Length: 91
Image (cartoon, rainbow, N blue to C red; front, side, top):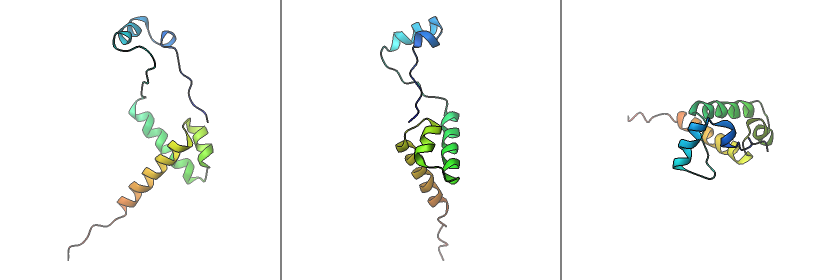
């Protein structure tokens, strides 16, 4: 599995921003990426699976666990099933 390494905040944040963050929290802190990052990664996972790429390989390419790949694919499958249900005519 390929995951992104943790970064030391002292090495990546300007000193004034680091000081501000330290006022609110110390220790491990997860900072989520912009929402567009997750949408693009989701599209990548779905496209790679459509090309027949294995879950393990997708996880390596996308930098996420195989479990997360399967979650994304299951959610996509569920959304596709909902879209294909035709509304009742009521007649």
